[in-house]
Image (cartoon, rainbow, N blue to C red; front, side, top):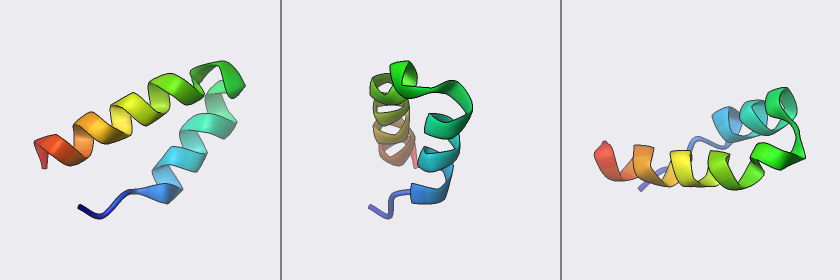
Length: 34
């Protein structure tokens, strides 16, 4: 399962440290869906 680290970093930088947990969950569910 390749992770999109670039997209993950963009989510963290754009949303801030509060959304880090949600970004990880979104990335995980995204990889599962693909």
